[in-house]
Length: 370
Length: 210
Figure 1 (cartoon, one colour):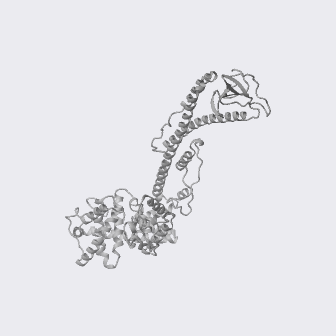
Figure 2 (spheres, rainbow over the protein chains, first blue to last red):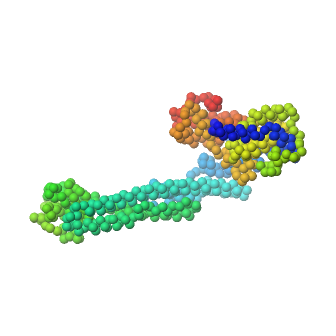
Figure 3 (cartoon, rainbow over the protein chains, first blue to last red):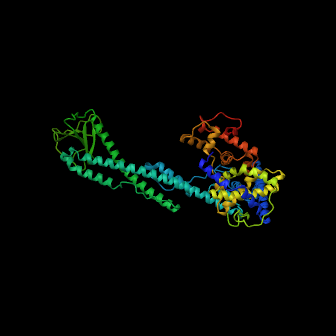
């Protein structure tokens, strides 16, 4: 049912090519020694089949010793499945079916520290693959090695080699997948950071820069933001060559960890900016909603200015129709205040450092030019 | 096949064209054998093609299988032995010899190939048109089978071997093969992946295929 018509036709052609007459002629031309050898082969084949059947029967009855004896005899007579059954008897955990006494390998902690905020899923995949490579053999396998007979060494080595190749292949597949995921996530974070920085630069270049105070700070603000962001490379370097062995895998993982740390640094920087935005917006809104807040018309007072310790000299977000700016009071001899810009003059709107309700707005009658 | 024959010294027709002849079959044995040969040569070719790596290998090994089987036919046929299982036991041995001469493990080719999707479909969902989606479901269902169950289904249905031949190859009785097939089909039918595909259950799973 699995073959195509063409394959069936090819097979038929091959089979038919061996004609019955040529077969009979070949048989007739056998020497007595060759014919005797054929008879001996047939006896050996039958013996191996019988021994294998007996071994399987004892195996199903749970008589391991007898089963092993007959299976060995079958294996000596080149019955491949007998050898496979013997292997399964020796290493019941190797066939993946969880044989008697089999248990999962103990987990080991992943020792390389990978920044979790950026590539948590990738880190888990990495750790899984790394554990698969570096973990010691499973407990049952270690047990299987104890008391082993020298004649079984070849089988043990073959089984161990096969298992190691399988584990390494699995780890390699998972590692490549994790690298691809990490690269994708890192590039996404970088693109977001760069986009935000460009937005800030564009904001700094808006007409609000016509204000004398703002104009003084715009270039520095934009330059510092862009410089910081441009320190981060455009794309994550592709440092992952094919991994021929464990050392290459280790080096690759360290490279990835380094890239992840770098990405985490940029993310932390952006987070700091975002938190500062949020805190500033909250402070402005709190001040504007205070009961003694000087209500102003956004048309007349389009710009609010926050002067506070630790504030950044930069443009900020729009709040209730106002464009808000913040300045550090370390650069200006004005108390921590929320100021408004009215017809080119700065007026005090609210003292945001007032300790409680009822505190009057900062009294700067007639406005005060900075 | 080497110029002098395989490991057992069995010659190819070309290699031994000049050898003196040995005793052949009686006319009656030869007539019986010819009927058996015609009936089974294609099946043996299919068996070998699943396990060897090309048409020439199939041709060479099948010739050696038939020579060994001719010897068995001559010596043992009259003693009541079952010919078909013996033919495939000899074939299995020749396949092992073939790969061993090439430093390979015959199990890589003979035992690890999986039961086909078509067989699973015929056993459980014969009315279904095979699509990518159904194939995914069949794969999930197939994964629920043990390695030995997959091997038995593959030999029994993909290779179209009789229960007696499968039994001789796997060291069990023919009824053991039938039970294993029934158990495997039950596993497939119990798979969540095949819900909605299943054909009406048959008391004998092998009837599904007939």
